[in-house]
Length: 331
Image (cartoon, rainbow, N blue to C red; front, side, top):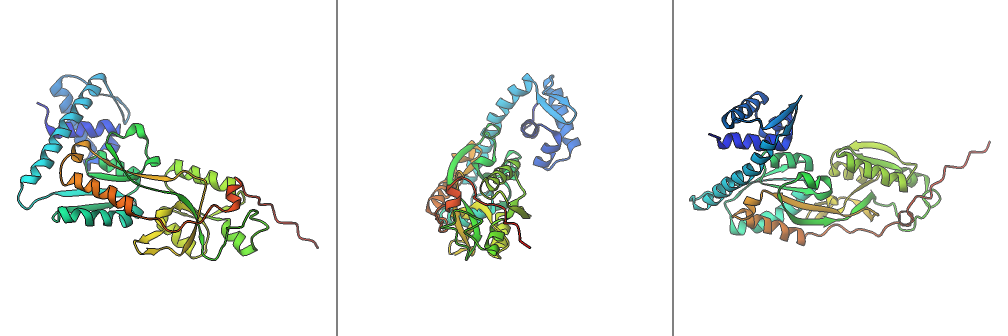
């Protein structure tokens, strides 16, 4: 007999493609996972994975069982979610994973809306990176993940998607540095301002994102240097606010709360907007209180406004910086 516990483990291991990652997703030791997979294979009389060191590849039988297990587990989860409606005084817990800026600005509005309909629902909020949110979602330790669409591979996601928010990328600079008429970043700025503009605060997360930012700065400020590496937008903006450099960030991250912004100036840049989406197992999207929570998130996203963003500076519109090396000193 196949147990639900074995099926959940098989589902997680199949998506993780390694016992090490599956162990992290499920919070279970690797020997326990191996034992459960071995028992499952023994009970059905066929191999589900081709094992290559720590990497696991699904066999044809494994691919068949994965399709069936997704249907079975979705039906079980949907039944359990629906039964909560009949449990007196219990509405369950919604676990949400999100970036700090989304958790800080959009989530409170959504919770306020939802609490009018389901005042007893408990929210468990995890401030995590998109990669971590996706792993927790696959491990069934999150109900909803709010992530930037460009940060995840579309082919690797098997959840229902819904729209939450879209904001532009901006160049955050210290207040007092006016870039509105800067066409030549060498001649149109003083020494102190030029130094700040060429001092870049770099994000040390997501290889693709980091490469995209490096390419942008190389194209527009080819004489820049990295002065600090950070792992959150909020730390970067705090450093910009202190006049220590500049950073390219999504506009919403400059909003501390609904009534307060970081003390920086924001200039639009020539990068595609950040697109925030929600991910949820499809079986949850059809039952309460999850359906109301999703609607609340979409409404909250539509209400939120980003801080004031100034037009692209001339040197950005030109497509490349007109910087030149400093003239040689005489004498």
